[in-house]
Amino acid sequence: MELEFTFETLVSSAADPAGLHTLVKNPVHNKMVVVADAELDAISTSAWIMASSPMDCDTIIVTHLNGQEMPNLDSFIATDTLGMKFNMYGDAAVTVGDYKGLYKNPYTGS
Image (cartoon, rainbow, N blue to C red; front, side):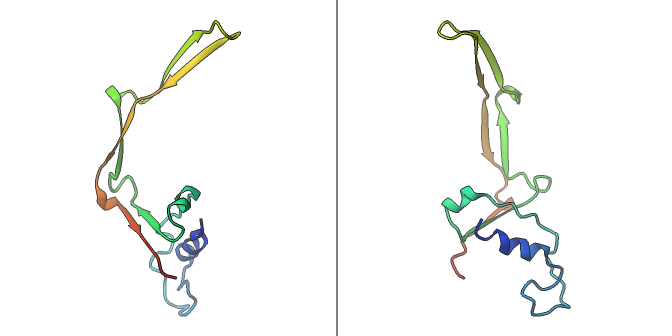
């Protein structure tokens, strides 16, 4: 979240984001979408990750047991409470596809 404003400025500026050359077009203008996640700050507040579109490259592949994508829902009458209890579970696995679709920059400078 610390770098979110910096990347939003970089991506949304039509000209040079530093303001040094106002007539020079920004080559990354509106070509990326910034997605910030506070959980990533627990790992590093200066590193950033770039991911390609899932339509371009299968980087992370989620598979399901026997092709069942919907979770299983079991209901039963409980003897210790008034009403019913439910169990919901699903089987999924994550596989690394093509590593070229993900990039982590371990930025440590200023």
